[in-house]
Length: 193
Image (cartoon, rainbow, N blue to C red):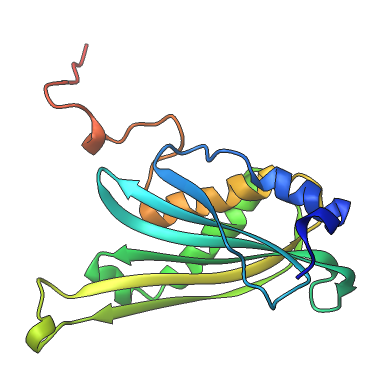
C-alpha cells in the first residue's frame, strides 16, 4: 500500500467525508487498520452498536481506491461492509428476513441521498444451540450482511450516514432523536388529555 502522503486527492476527499460523526449516539465509530491487499489505498472504520451497556450489533466499513479503476466496481472507489447482529431466535427462520435486511442498506443510502451503483452482497441468518461445556441459556440467532457498492457522488458523509442507518435498523434502534418507550426514564408517565 502506498504511503498516506502519496494518496490521490479523490481518496483523501473520500476519507475526509467518512470522518463524520454518526447521527446515533448508540453507534460508536472508530478508525481501524484497513486490509492491505484489496486495493492500493484503503481506509476502514469499525462500529459498535450499544443498547444500554449491551453490544447488539457491530460492523466494518472499508473504503477501497484503485486509481486506474476496477471493471467490476464501475469506478475507482468502492465501499465494502460487514455487519453482524444478534437476533431473537424466532427471527432466524423468518424467510422474509434476508430481503428486509437487504432493504435496510438500500433504504439507508437512499434516505441520505448517497448515490451509488454496482451494489451487491449477501445476507446470512444462522441459529445456534450450545451443548456440553459450551451449554448456555437459550438458542441464539445471528444476522450477517456483507455488501459493497460504488459511490457515484462525492458526498461520502451521506454514505456513512446511510451505512449507520442500516446498522441502526439491524440493531432495532429508533431513528435519531426518537426515544423508544423502553428507553424512557423510570417514573416518567404518559398522560392522556
